[in-house]
Amino acid sequence: MKEITKSAALIAAASGIVFGVLTPLSASAADASSALNWGACDGAGLDPRQECATLKVPMDYARPDGSTIDLALSRIPAEKPSARRGALLLIPGGPGGSSLDDPSGKGQKLPQAVRNTYDLIGYAPRGNAPSTTTSCGLEHRDLALTASRPWPAPDGSIDGNLATARRMASACARNGGELMRHISTVDNARDVDSIRAALGERKLSAWGVSYGTYVGAVYAQLFPGRTDRIVLDSNDNPDPVNPERAWVKITEVGVEDNFPEFAKWASTPGNPYRLADTAAEVRPLFLRLAARLDREPIPWPGANPEELNGNVLRQSMLNSLYDPDDYPALAQLILAAQHGTPLPAPQTLPDSVAQAMTAVGAATICNDAAWPRSTAVYEKGVAKSRAKYPLTAGMPRNALMCAAWPWQPKQPPVRITDRGPSNILLVQNERDVATPLSGALKMREALGRRTVMVTNDSTGHDAYLDNGTACGDATASRFLATGERPRRDVYCR
Image (cartoon, rainbow, N blue to C red; front, side):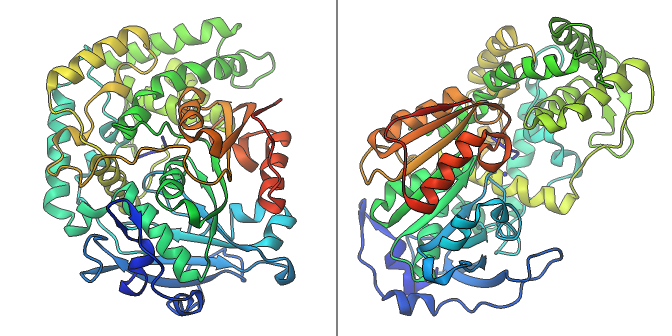
């Protein structure tokens, strides 16, 4: 899972669910589309064709006549009006991510036939600027990835992690406002349907990535008759009890799936960042260095925390395994730490950005499902994980701030099933650290006859038009442009 990474009473009936049954549309498509006034977008480097609008949605869909919040939307209209089919919503990852700039960005990587066919729609999910925002007002130290991803102490103790979880959860309760209680995957899925109605579309197509695959799957479960062509790319495990805990836990498997690829790259002759003569030597080299940094951290000015310790190295490893293009950054860091040369400049987010991403991520993960409160559950899980998966040192089974979250979920997680039209295509890389294949197969199993799956013999997160294969990209593009989908699951080399 990527780092913890998104409508008014007029269309509330189009988005609401009453005892699991969809209520009918309350207005015509033409009436709904009048809710949006498209104009110029703020920001630099955007495609001049991109337009922006603001949509009001209920803060709490159980109270559609209550307080509202703003959702920021963007679009680039279909490039061939005579071929236009509808709207393609770009559902971002995270939780905590935004797709507001994506019509100008990754949307332009879509082939011409797809851009001819759809208006490309981006949005900033609730809690993310410039939509109505929320923040936990966290201390600077708690914005470090090693705080939100709780790495145990070198001896395996989680006492410090539990203290951090309580401190961060208390800050969210104190500073987050009412919106903090109404950020969840179900809220996001209902926002998606509010966007659909406001666009004047009876059905919506979507390309969801990473956490966006779970939003897309929940949307397709709650509103099956309002889905057109759905591509879910880099798929989460839709665990019916605690999906987010399953995502974090499976990171230990994702690292094991991907580290051998880094090791092969880092031992290749001629590589200027070569770490060892053979791939087999890279893993013990990394583990020895992490253990040494546990004992003897190196100052790292500008980083958060301002030292390279064992857990910061482990987190840097996890970051780099998302994309093979980032392997050199990890190797450079390892070489500098080994040889005592200056560390590379730290890559950090501005505190304002980190505040928003952390708050939205925490709210989603903690509001979606109840996490264990027992310290013993986490202690046992961490000890077991450390023994079996030393590269991740127990972090994936540790206590996030959800262990101290002040609120209970409003409802249980949505159970993903095969009920609904067969109009979903899953695209998945075989080696993906954030959304491993083993978890994606759970999504495939849950959706059943509604989907087919393209598995790429490829490495990295974000498969379609990024780290996948030409075969996989062509299959997804053809489905979006024409509706043609393989009759059965396929494997792309």
